[in-house]
Image (cartoon, rainbow over all chains, first blue to last red; front, side, top):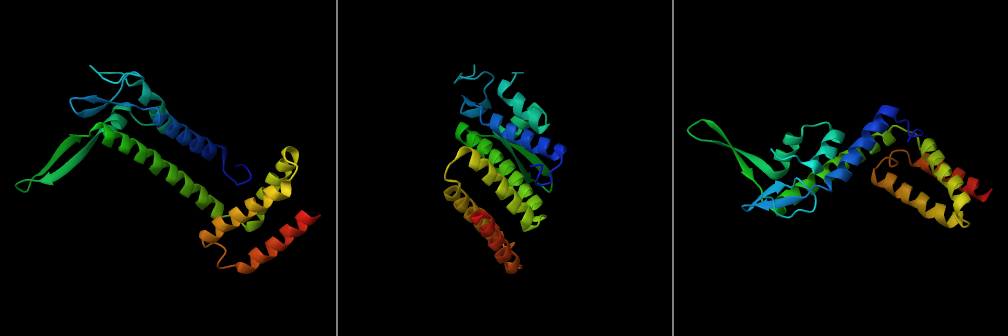
Length: 48
Length: 140
C-alpha cells in the first residue's frame, strides 16, 4: 500500500473500516415479539 | 438499556454512536404526508430483514472502499503497477518454484481488470510496450 502512494492515515482508515465490517458480521439479532433486536450477549437466541 | 457488546467494536471502528447503528440496523424510518403535514414513523424489522440490512451495510462499505482504491490506482501510470507485479514475482520466487506459472495468470488477471476499467482503451500503445518490457523481464 506504500507503493500505491497511500498515506499512513488513509491506510489506517481503510483497515479500520475493514475491521469494522469484520466485527459487523458478529452482530446477532434476536426475536422479540416478532420484531428484531440486537442481542446483548452472544449465543443467546431469545432476549427476555 | 441493554448493553450491545457486539455493536461496540464496529461502532468504535466506524466512529458512530452505538444507539444510532442499532436503530439503523433494526428499523427504517417511513416519511409520509398527512393533511399537508410531514409525519415520520419508525418501523422495526423482522429478524430476516435485520440480517439482510446488516449484510447490505457491510457490502456497501466494502464496495465503497474498493471504489476508493480503484480511484487511487487510476492516478498511477502503468509502470508503477508493473513494479507492484514485480514485487509479487520477487516474493513468489522465495516461496514457489514455478513462479512463471504463477505470475502469468496474475498478470493476465490484472490486465483484465484494467481493461474492464476502460483505462487502457485510450492508450493501448502504452500497454503493448509495457507487456513487451514485461515479457523481456521474465525471460531474463
